[in-house]
Length: 69
Image (cartoon, rainbow, N blue to C red):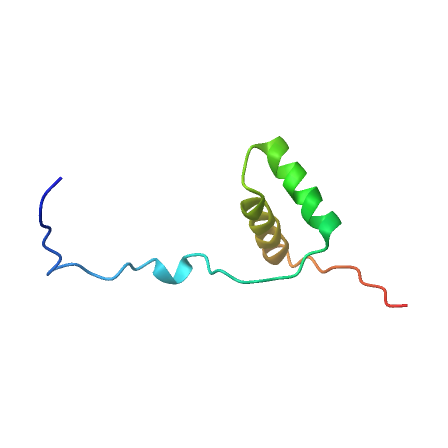
């Protein structure tokens, strides 16, 4: 490892806009437990699993079926 690095000609990351963004959401305990258990079975972090599922829903324009009482 060098003692010093020269970043004078560095450029901003062109993919920075596509990076993940941290948000806070409220999720029911049973839904969270479901995704945590499924993620453990699949060998991946539960946040990545939820992100992949939501991305797939957005890609396919899946809409939730909501019925209000």
